[in-house]
Image (cartoon, rainbow, N blue to C red; front, side):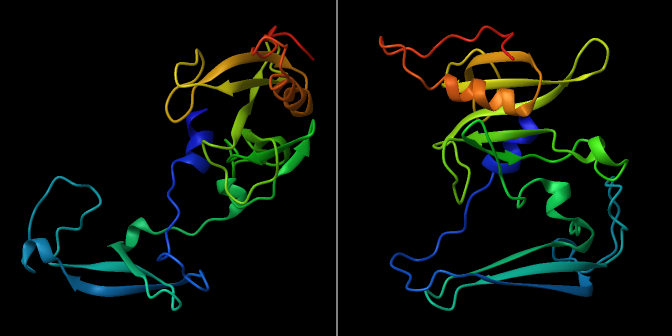
Amino acid sequence: MTQLLNTYLAWEELAHAPQCADPRWVVDIRTEHSVYRSITHGTPHTCPTPGCDHADRHDVTSVRIVCSSCGRARIISGGADAVRTTSTKALGYGQPPRKAGGLWLYPGAPLLFGWGHGEDEEPEGYLVTRTRVDRVTTDNVIGAIFKDRGPRRGVKWVAVAAPAPDGEYGYGLVRWSRKAEALRSFTAAAKWISAQGKDTGNGESTPATGTER
């Protein structure tokens, strides 16, 4: 669950200057080879870090992010070995959402991406919003769905809904007030989450039974 939340909610959008007329970022990347280590003033050193080659020089990759409209620019630099190329399929983020149960489901990363085919590369779960959004945030997420296994290793689905600071379920960025287990499909899970938003007339949502299909 934590990884699914981190895929979407543990990121901050780069802000343009107020009243930016054309808010678009131009992103470029550059790797410099054999750069002097600034913290050691270019001298050889020793350290216990496995990723360090203990040399006086190393490779540095920088990402330049610029908006020519508002004039804001950011430079992010780090060791070249910290940069990796992957895909939206491996991240989950960047994949189009699925619609199920009248809701929008945003996929997380596959748990075993690259180790198999078919089911192994299906998302570990989904964050759920009521309408399609440009960006999933703590303000618009209403639930989450994640894959589980039954006693005979059959695929089941678990759903949580009704985010609340003191919710009984989950931890980290969002906690949840209601939970249902052993659902037969992610569509059934989405329908259950949708039902949690229906008011009973006394200001409370319908309770979860944990066995709905």
